[in-house]
Structures are given as C-alpha cells and as structure tokens.
Image (cartoon, rainbow, N blue to C red; front, side, top):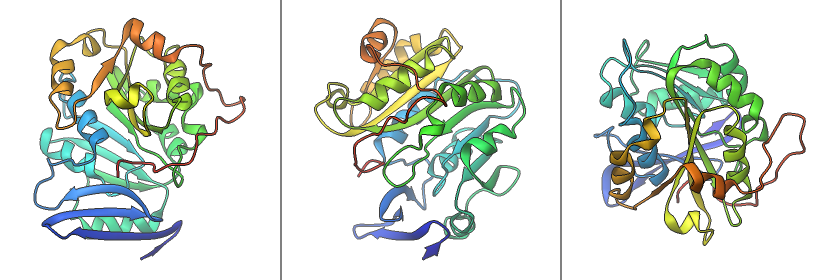
Amino acid sequence: MPIATGTAEVQRSPDDPDAVTLLVNGVPSSHLDLADPLRLDFEYMQQMAAVLDHLPAADGPFRAVHLGAAGCAMARWADVRFPGARQIAVDLDPVLVALVRDWFDLPRSPALRLRAGEARAELGTLADASADAVLRDVFAGDRTPPHVTTEEFARDVARVLRPGGLYLANCADRPPLALARAEAATLAPVFAHVGVVAEPAVLRGRRYGNLVLVATDDPALLDDAGLARDLRSLPVPARLLVGEELVAFAGRAAPLRDAAPELEPEPGSAVDP
C-alpha cells in the first residue's frame, strides 16, 4: 500500500496464520500475533518487555509514550500487561497511522491514542511528569535519525517521565558499536542510572544487532538481580551492562548534542530480521 513516506506491506507467515510482519519501505518494522498481543517475536521487544515487567507500579494507570509506533506491537503488549493503561503512540506517517488502526484492531482511545507527527516535536507537546515509560523505536530507513539521539532530546524525555520512570531506546548498530556507545555516553549526564541490554555476541562486537538502552532515576530498577535473570532466560539470552561495565562499554565516546556533527551508523537493517 502507498503511504506518505513510501510503501507499507503486511506479510503473513506461511506456517502461522495469526502472525504478520509489517514492512515499511521494505524494512521489517513490526511483528504481531493477531490472536495474542503478549507474543513479541522481535528480540529487542522481548528485552524491552522484560525491563518493563520490573518497573515499580505508580499511582493510577500505567502511562506510556511510544515514539516510532509502526504496527504498535509494544503498545498492544502493554495494553494487556497493564490493564487500564493509557498510551500515546506516535508515527511520522499519517497514512500508516490510519492503516494500522484498521489492520490490527488496536485498542481505542483513551487506552491508546495514535498521533501522526515527528517524534521529537510530539514529545515536546507532552506535559511534565506525565509518563511512566517512554519507548523510542524511531528509524528513517535503516538508521535512527540523529536528532532523537542527542542529550537535548534525552533531557526532554526525562522531563516527560515521572520520578522513577523509564526510558527505553532501540539502537541498531554494527561493530564497533560507535552509535550505541555514544548513546550510552549521552544518557549518562541526564539519568542517574543507565544500562545497555543486548545479546552477548552483539555486545562483544561480533555482529550487527539491536541494543536496548535503558535509563531511569530509580536506583533499584537496574540493580535488580531478577531483571538480569529474566533477560538471561529469554528465548535468545541477553545481558545487561550497568555500572563499571557500562562505563567500559561507553569508553571514550562523546555525548551526542544537537550542535555536534552527525554520527553516521553504517548501513544495515533497522530491526531484528
């Protein structure tokens, strides 16, 4: 189907009648089980879900902002995982926003409000301390736009999060993981506690893959032995780097700022194949 930014295609799995993959301009952007919103096939989404499972409950309904919504797989998951959740999902393409609402029978407003707009601009319209979690899964083709990787952007995320809230960002990178290291260095001045989650082979720089950056001001969340255990127990085990390991991972990478030259990641698929 033509959309404002190119094309969107839904592919059914030949051996799983309930499974579909949404491709945007040929890149796999979401995988959904139409019968089971709790099923997440992309490994980085499984990692995000594992971290969200350990987020301490706040007063009132769970509130989340999804930047780069695509097919809203994570929003569907959270709607079931956190009954009564109130979520906002943002995607740049207004035609795609309308299509996924029809195609995937998504939760209706106020449970899930869909917005067409640029991720950083829409984030800027949100009230202070209005979200328990902000999830960034923004890509332009096969890369994360630089303006949603900077310290200034991270400070706006922190503004929107409630005390103890959680920021999760999907970073696709390849050896030597220059972008992921720079993003970790960027979050450190903004959030008291920062971590990186990925498969061990990706963390060792052996291959291209997705890394999930985790940031919060909650001192307990990333120091939870249960979280590390749950990540190791995923279908594809993952590691969590925090503390000295995170500092070593970031190395000499400089924080990314709006006025700095763009850091160009090498070409590659933006999401799990």
